[in-house]
Length: 300
Figure 1: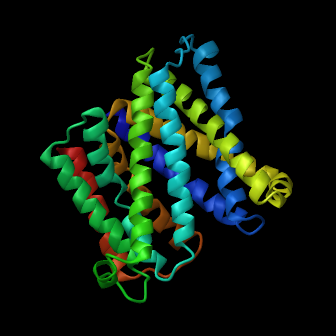
Figure 2: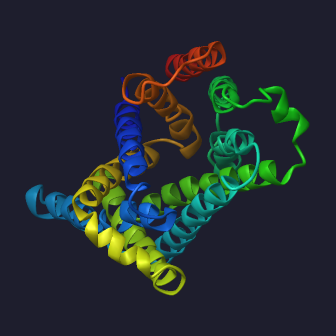
């Protein structure tokens, strides 16, 4: 099995753990605070990753160049924007449909990868993306009262627009992170990913701190009070991001994000085993399609 595949599956598993931890944080702080901890508390661990590679393994630290800084800035802002759109969508009716549209990220990443980086995908990869995308959409709308048909009836709704826009910015972020890492041109995919992570997470921490200082200063105190679990979120989140960046340095962002849909399987398992939630037939069928899409991706 290829290295990027193993790294992506591990990153998806860690991201699911981070999401579970952030659900607990939502009980003690607001959305902006719960979002911030994945960045702010991840900075020390991003520094550790670079330090271990530089001093522990002797890899030289690549010097950032203007192209790298441009890609990182675009990626960091796009990721925050995508998250903000996703959060805004939660305030609308039938937000599950919008969530389904936001899951078009792999397909949009394929388009942006072709436009920005010249990444070309074979028919097999595109087929795998399409199959897993249908599976993710089914899971996303499975618990909606209006069902999967709402996905098509609400094409021009505000919720759908927010979901599509969120997927667009997530796709731009993924491709931009790949562009940033590749622009460093060495010494290897691990160091390139670590430096990209560090630069991005520091910038995102600064942006979020400024935002909270002016918009919700009370969040800072709540974050400080929940520093223990926040530190764990930072560790898991930074490690997952490190995995994503390594995988996207080795493979196209679209292929990585397509395989990353396995996270929905982990989320599905968490819902059943941890939160004891009921599972319906549409969710099970969606999981089967995701697995089928992943198998197509791995066997081509």
